[in-house]
Image (tube, rainbow, N blue to C red):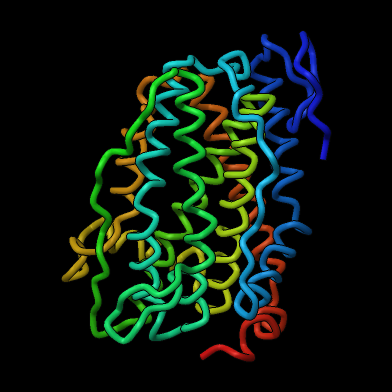
Length: 319
């Protein structure tokens, strides 16, 4: 990893060359550098192979020290500051209900994959009361306070996450299909967060970029684990299968679809939460570029996973 140097007219940071007048093409190159480093096939394989280790001995990933007081507005480039702050606020509101996310996912998982249910949602007693949070929650719950610190440092104002409802667990007579639909939604949200934080890293430097790096590393880690586990748990899945599932959800053909997570609804909500309408054309194009490049990288990695490898990782002690 490239060492972050003290800021000057032209410096080197986690994405490469940085200065206050980065143009569209330079930002594209920074995005490519970040994807090549943080989403290399080797790194993705390592994060997936770490999942059964975490099943046995869960250990939260420690963050590197951050100089919070050194965060300032000069560390943002290529985004209007008001838009950057609106994105931060939207991310805070989205990250905040982590307990609801984890417990909903636990309910979908616990009947079919108890180990993954514990990783995601922790342990509960016979009454369903939480005894200990899962590793996913322990790592993700650091995000909202970190984003709030950044917001306060950039504005001098404290921000309170908006109260929002999270779609609750809804079961049918086919728990495997329930889990499949929910899993697609969960992977999509982790993927979206990965794209957003890497994209923001390309537009920042210094301690501000270091905070976003920690968020991105968590999201990549969790997205990779969920994606790879899903490939093992649903070997029949394919792009046509995923497309058909999404189409049925969009068209409301499922008798209880209104109670289930809608990826289209989530996308629409996120464009509002992240103030998409106020983004510049170059912001939109570079973000779409980021999402496309990351999806391509994930698809190539996913195709390299063999059934034998996945069975070796997850087929022994499940249950």
